[in-house]
Image (cartoon, rainbow, N blue to C red; front, side):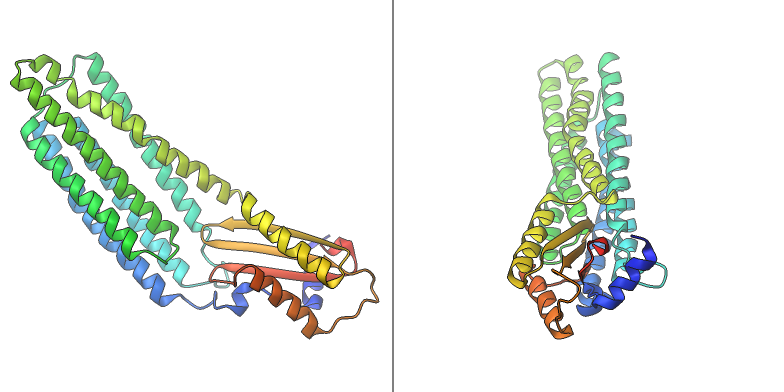
Length: 329
């Protein structure tokens, strides 16, 4: 079926899209504004903590703290990009991006995951090299204080974002909150490593204490790497528009029930999820071209499909077609 024929069929059958019926075209000012404010607060806090980390790391000579700080700088940069993306999403669709800017969410998640995965790889290589070179001494006392404070602040920021962002359904805020949680775990691990180094130095084992910083750097990079790797894999599926199995099965079930209830001989559905946006297309085939239903009856079927799906929120595009010719679905 060519594109022109598809467009003509949609016009004749009364295509219904969620964007035209539930406000997708209107900016979501309240929720979008709260999302952007939280992202700005998070970015500012991340930059402050990261700058402190880089300064302390350079002062003490602890590469693990420098890595912690640089990890945060990258995350802050990604948060600012996320803020820009949130602004675009809140604008709704326009003549250039007629489905809105939802597609930018998985692209940003992919970029964020790729950069953080690269940072973890670099940290692993640096730590492994230091271990092979005999370790490196660090200022344990200052490191313990910084790492403990950073861990507390990171976990507090995670709890704050999760609480304030509840109900927004924001992929961007979820990514940012997860980054704070990972940062808190990283800082807690650093704190433990510096405590161990201090105990070893106090016991007269300064040579062994020199291995604490690179060892924890290697361990943390290995522990953190799976998280951005999972984000890259998940966002890749959305960028490639791989149909979510649960959504596909749910929509197919709803379409099958409607087809049986109203006497359609065939139905077909297609789904995709991109960021917070859902794209759902359902086609019903009537027994013959002589089958007669009023526009009101067709709209009733559409409404039943919407109700079965739980309603249409912002970013959900639904198309329901009716035809007697299988080619059109």
